[in-house]
Image 1 (spheres, rainbow, N blue to C red):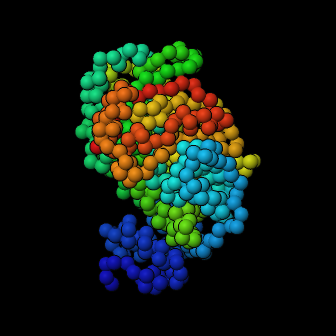
Image 2: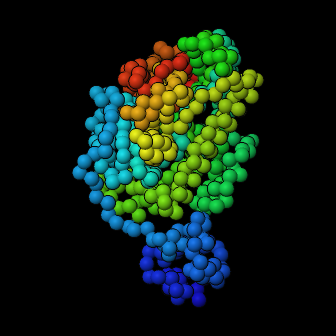
Image 3: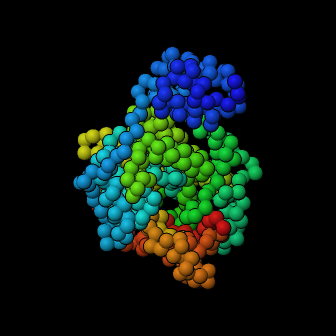
Length: 463
């Protein structure tokens, strides 16, 4: 009897010769490889005898499901007709993004869709795509950076506070923010999110606890940023005791770091194995929420979203402490996530991949570029957009096209013209890479009301 468990060992125990064996081996060899074979086989025998008891278990849940109610793996053809949809700002959106939405609307699970005016093509769903599905979640419909979000904190400080403090505020950003794969804070912070059950019960998540702890309060590469700027409120906001004037604020944009990326990778793989689709839509493989994997992904996705929120809380706490000032209010929202929401009287899973939730009365922040204003908004609850709005200005130039088109000296000139200081940042995030935010906002007046603006002044990004 060798040390490594094999399919023959499980068949000897009485496991059926079906996919349940492969599933069992995959789970055990991944998560229990250091344990003795005898103890695993003893446990496996219990699973075989009493599979109902092991439903929902981190290691054995999927095996138990395979014994009681095996997931049927069948090729899914697309429907010949699309689910209903709306496009906002059609003339500003590239054709490929539209075609990606059209394909998604033909999935057997699709109920309704929408495209926001900042939309551009992505993997699976287009960026700026919103899709409601029937009891199914598409990992690539959420995106790799689960819970990527905006967070705006306003200080009770007049805008004039920033004058003459450029070097001081740059130093605060350099000392208190971390970016990319390798930078982490020397003094780590604790957070209640680390004590969640998902870190104990879901094997793939359990393995990511150390990484999540190390990366708390850090930001990713690409278009993620932390910046000081000026908030201008159009009207007084009595609930926050803020008058209609200009204030110092911090805006951050990032997501769930390595935790979210690894969760996305793991469940995208599982979805692709269980939900074969035509090649042009294979990134849209889904997990049924009545299955073990579907329920587990839902828990892991929500954990990643809460972790992303925790990262922003830590960033803003560190900056407030360095400033020696108190935050008056924080406005924040996810834009890579899935929610259970009512759509035309039916509960659906609403995926927003690069789209801001905009239910009636819901606050959000829609950024421009590093030289263009962002907008504090309140949702109007428009049913046609699935109660969503854009998540920013949207890209006009791909990253590759930016590198071929723009130079560092051009970027420096645009920054100087707009009185913006930049720490880090690459050519592929040039301000010119983005659509005109004013055009985008004008195309979504049916979706949100504007309460105020945020103008960036000192921006930090990954190098």
